[in-house]
Image (cartoon, rainbow, N blue to C red; front, side, top):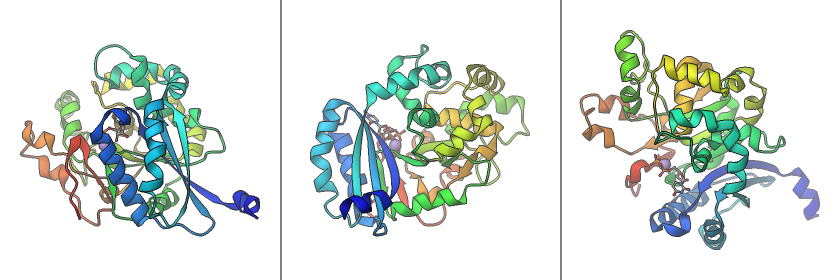
Length: 305
Ligand code: UDP
Ligand code: MN
């Protein structure tokens, strides 16, 4: 019976931020590209289901509910859609991330509405304990591979890793860590791959919520005092939310992060090439191997194929 199957289904959870989409044609187009490409390349087993989580406001939810059935028409797999109210999540999140916001947000204060940019950081405290793993994805992505293969990367996490994430592919953190690099000329902080630490990009993230809950170290790093201490050590002042936090703690504790290959988040933004870093840009931007997901960050166009 149907009920019998429900209980046996193995669920793969993916989450996307999905706010103000009803107000932006640009975001609606990106939503079409990411969902159509996910449907086109997605393959799951008979007893598996993809659960799509969207963090939305009322207007975006209404639009999403209307658009999704058509965007997923070609999907050969079972799926289920869950909308999460952005205000309800923000309310839970704010007390946990308030103290880090001043280090990693634009502007000087800790704006309540900015807390949601740190959802991934405290997802393990927000989502129910039954939820053990979740993949967080940007809207400006295009799949060229099966999204199920991305979930398989969880199985390669070393024992101390809690998050899987690809490196940042522009020299943005070479810039952010400028002062630390000057004071520590031998350090690899902000250097390009393969030997350097270029920081992370948050467009595609594997959150092992179970490991995040269990890791004493990770939870200590969420404490305001520890964050302030590290921000002072690295002279860190950013505005990119969760990816700044992960980049900064990654400089200190690399073992917490499983490095996804660049093909799983092939970023296309070239802004820093034209803003003082043309000489080193290619060292960061370069990515060998198959592209599984294109990331059209900073509104970059994505190749047709
Ligand atoms: N986003 C959203 N509403 C907005 C702006 C952003 O839901 O008005 C979400 C969306 O999922 C998007 C993510 O936030 O992919 C990060 O923003 P974006 O991809 O534009 O940043 P970039 O990758 O260019 O740095
Ligand atoms: Mn993006």
